[in-house]
Image (cartoon, rainbow, N blue to C red):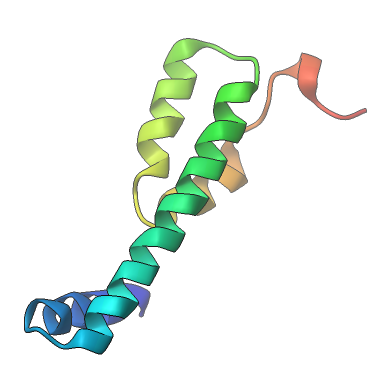
Length: 82
């Protein structure tokens, strides 16, 4: 599973394996970029502040947060496509 592979990657990087350090850095960079893109999209939509705060916190849960956001967040009716 992805979590196990990331855990192994982290432990190898902490042990000083240079390839694992680079791979972990790339993973963190891609994760951060995707999270920031989704946060930007979330904040540009209309909606209540509490809903935005909730979804912003959810987005910081690695990978699972993205899936929940994309599956369950619905924009307000005024912004939906017709």
